[in-house]
Length: 220
Image (cartoon, rainbow, N blue to C red; front, top):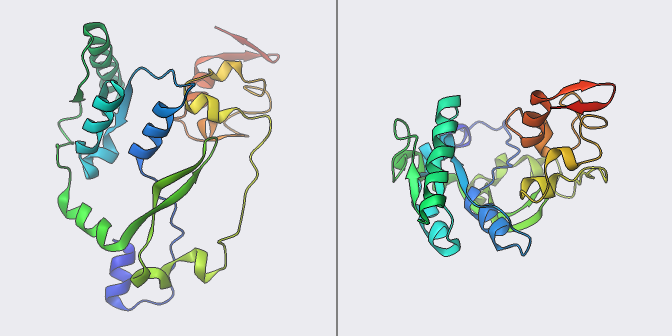
């Protein structure tokens, strides 16, 4: 909306560093991996409020995996886990909407039209996983004058991930945070080495908040 309004108002001194990502391509990348051990997904309700959840139907059926759209309150997450486990135990595969107070099947179509107007899909580098084709959004050519990458020549700027971090394995559910040698030592919420420790919603940060750290030892 900010980019669209800047264009409509003829504002020149405005730039956007676009780093938006799309959830379904990342889910498919994880599920298609030979090492995949994910049995179900809780899909983020705030994203689905905009996008709806039609795109998840094909993923659930293709990979035989339950997907539950979930809110962020503790009760929402617990109910989402419960709904997912019920599907697994019954041997059924569905896309269920726990977050119906905010999410509809089709999503916010007005917002979707604006997104299509301003953005187009592009390949995107995911921390800990690598490049995923058509998994991100970039500004369309008609809005490229607002692209900070082009305006400030940032296209070739690269960041180096820590060799101590196993965030890719954690993001794919292959390993747990406590199986990382850096967890709670070199890697903490104050000094995060990877994506799962950066956000309070990340797996590593959640594990960290649930453990007592005493002289470098982790006690349950």
